[in-house]
Amino acid sequence: MTDPNVLVDALRGPTTTHKEAELDDVLAELDACEPALLAMLEAGAEDPNTLDRGEGELDLGLAYALALLSRRQHTPAFAPTMRLLADRTGVVADLLDDWDPVTIAAWIYGLADGESAPIRALVKDREAFPPFRCAALEALVLLCWDGKLDR
Image (cartoon, rainbow, N blue to C red; front, side):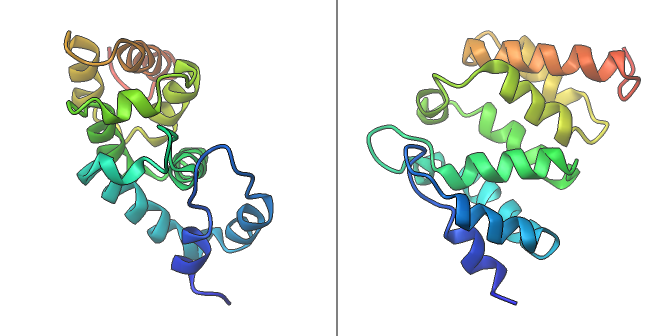
């Protein structure tokens, strides 16, 4: 088995690149790669500047990490994801500016750990990036609708 950190690191690059073979490698070892994917997300939440892979493009590895972890409902990724979306530097907003809020809502929904406070805080934050607020509201509605959160 290849080192999971090496597999996950191979996903990194601008979103304009295609990493199909690398993604297949991570998918084949997804259980082993989850900690490395989470570490990438936590590092990005700690320092959003590390997510810019040139020309204002989001690091493809982070996009894959969010998609894979949310699909697996890996709740330890919830807190760093919410910190990332609450970023006040403007870096994350610039990088995710052209992303569909429905995709971001799906990340929040898939990662939600039963705690609504971070989602509600983002919805109520008038200084937050508007598409992130919309995504948080959509995720909150869906989580309540599905009975995963209380109203």
